[in-house]
Amino acid sequence: MSTAMLRMYISFGAMVLMFVAIGLIFLSRYKFKNKFLRGITAALAYLSVITSGLIIFYIVMSGPTMS
Image 1 (cartoon, rainbow, N blue to C red):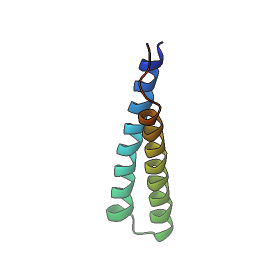
Image 2 (tube, helix red, strand yellow):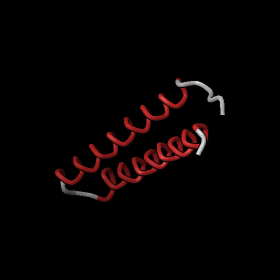
Image 3 (tube, rainbow, N blue to C red):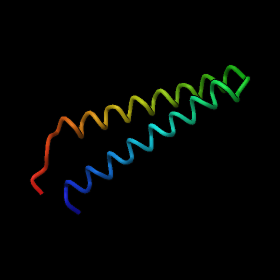
Image 4 (cartoon, rainbow, N blue to C red):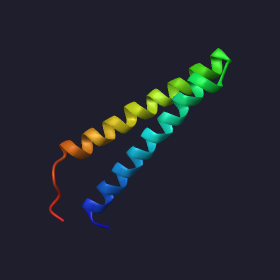
């Protein structure tokens, strides 16, 4: 597998993490009434947003590939 394809799949994984964060925030804000469960899901959502942002930042800032 070439480096460019690997970076593409990693960026797709980061996008999936962003969609997971959207779902977790929805659950946290509108579905859960328990404050502990709301806090856990919100923390996981924000952690996934931060992780996906760092992944995308790395992919974009690492520049183009030769292959």
